[in-house]
Every structure is written in C-alpha cells, then in structure tokens.
Image (cartoon, rainbow, N blue to C red; front, top):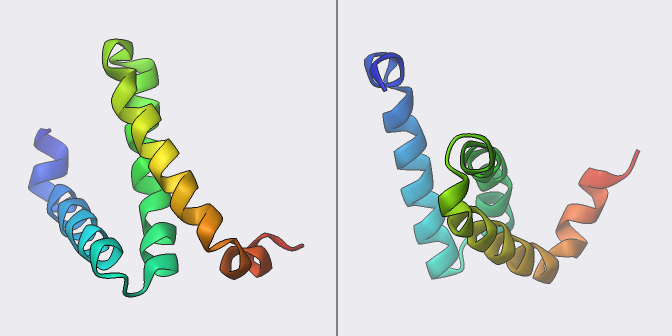
Length: 83
C-alpha cells in the first residue's frame, strides 16, 4: 500500500466510500452515489476474484447490494446506457 498511501489516493477512495455510504443511508443523491461506487466495487471484486478468492463472499455481497439499489433507480441509469 506504499504507492497508494504516498500519493494520497487511498484517502480519496476512503472519503468517497464514506460519503457515498452516508448518501445511501440518508437517501440523498442515491443514483450519484451508486454511480461513484461502481469503480470502487469493481476494484474490490477484481481483487477478491484474483488475489483472495477465499473471501469472495464480500465481493458477491457488495455486487448484490449494489444491484438491488440500482434496480430501484434504473429509470435514472437508462439514459446513461443508451448509445
């Protein structure tokens, strides 16, 4: 974690995780919070898939929770997925 902590990137990721989590709990800007969480959850999932398959349950739980929340707001995401 040397390169990430020296660049300050890990702090940015943790602040984004905290703010998005608070936004999801409070119900404010839920689609934006879900959109910001996509690359973070993708990195977590890829890490657990490649480096630590024994704790893949964490990744599956995150993807499942994100999918359930995104399904409730699919009308907001629909224009983003149009070509």
